[in-house]
Image: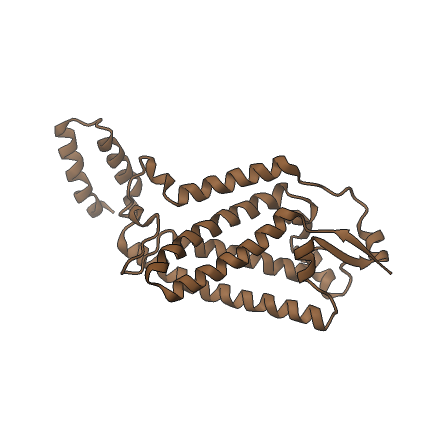
Length: 268
């Protein structure tokens, strides 16, 4: 006999499907290129906002959305491999997949903020670094996508395997939020009070993620942030640039400051 329980909250499900649609859209716009490359950048910023939302929700969301509930610790993985694990959310191997996907997407989006294609696209943070570093991050961006594609394929294979081999539908609960489990499992697992996130926590997560996305889309450029051109001397360069931009140096001091950066690399 089975019972139906509520497992995935609405924000969790919205994140899942919006992320799937956004990653697909980012892939298509990158492949087609041309005028659609700008949409590739916009989707990248949107994905960043989704990732920030998921990270925040992983700490303040409902029970099964919290990282602490499904984090793949060694004891949990060992119990799962021995067939002794009991749970109703992500199993330990599924949790490893989730964390790997989130980490790879974070690398993908993070490098994309600084990337360029030598034609028409420059990430929103391209002007904060030099071209050589941007080219290096662009290479990482492309490599991270290949890793991401592999993880997505594994994810889809796992869904098919569970559907046909274990007769478990993993897609339906992510659509409805509800899952059917054996009564014995429900009695063994559902002993603690279920944590509900609520509107306030959802609003807080949305505000934080929206603010980060706004900053990544160009909002951060409104602040006096200096361009970093040399990793070893970036702090000194930034300090000089900011002071000069605020008009805090005299003409003679500005001339000295302009000479100093040219001489500084010889000391490193």
